[in-house]
Amino acid sequence: MIKSIFTLVLLSLMVFPVSSIIHAQTNIEVESEVETEVGVEIETESSASIESQTKGEVKTETKTKDESNSSQASQKSEAKSEAKTEMKTSVGNIAVSAKGDIAASVGLPTKYPMPAVSAKSSVGLQTNQHLYKPGDSVSIQGSLWTELLSGSNNNIVTIKVFDKTKNVIYDVDTQITADGTYSTEFSLHPDAAKGSYTVTVELDSNVTDPTGIKIQSSVGSSTKIVVVPPHVFKIDVKDHGNFDVKVATNSTVNSVKFDGEEKKVSVVVEGQSGTKGVSHISIPKSMVSGNMKIMIDGELVANDKTIVTANTETETEIEISYEHSIHTIDVIGTQAIPEFGTITVMVLMIALVSIIAISTKSRISIMPKV
Image 1 (tube, rainbow, N blue to C red):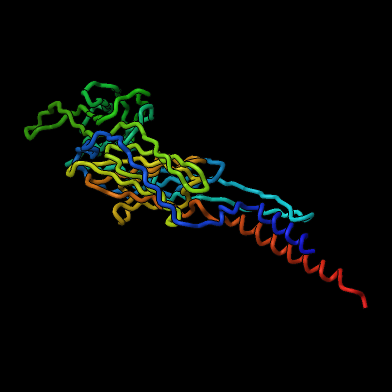
Image 2 (image 1 turned 180 degrees about the horizontal axis):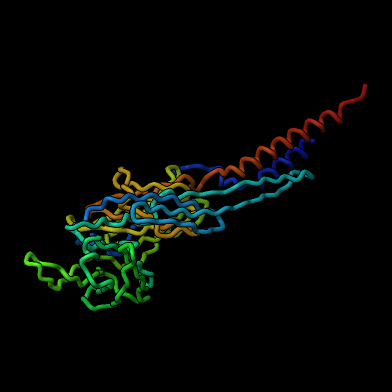
């Protein structure tokens, strides 16, 4: 009887690895000798104030289907998916199954707010990201002040992109829509050089001077983006193997750490004071996932300073903008390894109840009949 119960206990323990019960803090520091260009401006040179707000909700599960709705006044993107998981095992001759819904919500904006336009800043311009990797697709969009359009006989804007050596790598004339917006998209070359790139938009317009004479003028705006290839940092987590955390940044990366207890990845970056910094941090979902929040030096980052740039079945990529100095960026999730999952707990409980029931029945059966 004792041997039977011991066998059942061993079988139940096979439902989940012993290592998954260990919930200890793990700190791993990876020193990087890779230095990238520091001090690249990424802010829009137009003086338009940002008045619109961004709301973002991203929910991810194993199958992904994107549903997004956006407008100039409010931008809200939501990606939903559903994943069903089923686990089956057996304790002795008793079949045990557990079903559960797995859902992970990133909980961060997926777009930056569209810059407002006015008489002072009549042409709005922005890109969907501040940093890109070679081969990425660059989306450019903006809007024009209504009064500017009413005084113009032109419905075309010219968009150009210059690399760090001032060579034009993209040049297109784009139609202005009825609501005064414009957009275009192009792909960077897979071997695009790293550095600062300038995006410009220009509109030729007829302007009436104080004497009533119409004169030709040109108005426009510009912004900068950063092109940087990512660097892979291998994080060794005890009993769980290696995980690749990818960082693309115009800062210098001093270290990368993983804290399983706090469910966070920390990246220490440094750059020349007075310049703008931007980083893309890609984290495997098997390492840290769930509802994310971003902290810089212990303070929560505003929504207009961070967005989700990629959210796949396997990883989450987040862009963070900041003023250069020495900063610790914390990407904090709600799930992380090592963790004792809900489904595993369910299977364990069923297994233990089954063992107790079997052992109780066995004791009763060997009692002598009166």
